[in-house]
Image 1 (tube, rainbow, N blue to C red):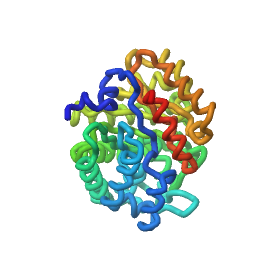
Image 2 (image 1 turned 60 degrees about the horizontal axis):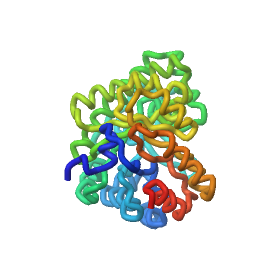
Image 3 (image 1 turned 180 degrees about the horizontal axis):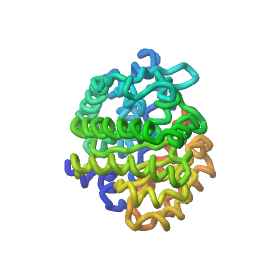
Image 4 (image 1 turned 120 degrees about the horizontal axis):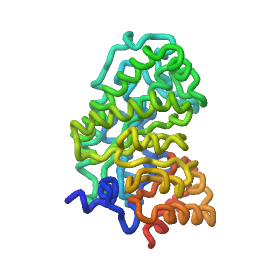
Length: 342
């Protein structure tokens, strides 16, 4: 099937669709009963990510149920630091842990284990062989700043203080961590593309925690380097940049990074984005995940605002961040009908 017959890929290449393509961040996950049933048989989250058969099944579940225009690989952004040599595990109810935290240990002390990514490539190959012909296949990686915040602190945090302090007090050491993440992310995304993903997204979930100057150094510059290297290897593969929390720095990100499309989080006014972002640059987003939980008039009003905001710009309908576990299935079905005009 030609790529142009896939509405999501066509949008990423700058062709506005009569009805926007639709997928949801974290669409493969805990809000689906079939995911919960499979997860219960597989043990921990990381074990699920590294089981190609199971991870492929999780990737495909929302496609079977909803017929989204895009499938996104089921994995986690922290497989990259795991492949760089940190130990990775998930504490029940508390989230990921990485050891040793690089606030206390040197990057050079880690022993890289890139073979840990082989299971992800196997998952990609399985999904690529099973997707419906009209469904675009998205891969992803965490952006360097966001991944580094976990590597430095050894876990997530609300303010990314450990990484911010290190970036300010020892920019050379922090820059070496960023460079290592850039290099492996290019290899990782290239491997996904070689196994069958058709576009990739760079998730910078903590981009909003930096000042403008630090944002330029640790968000724009490393993402631009990933885009530059990946485009040299795979010039026809679209790249979506998603700098959550960037706010007024979105236009600078769009100009500086060179991604093919920009993801908007739920705090961005879509009308402002349409006015301020470069002309004809495709955008993705940006329904508040809690509006999808709430449903009813609030959901309909939010959908209408987003659909009306981009009268000429290529647009992919999505959430402003990941779907939350208590999202009712019926609300997702309603969203699909509204966006598709059914």
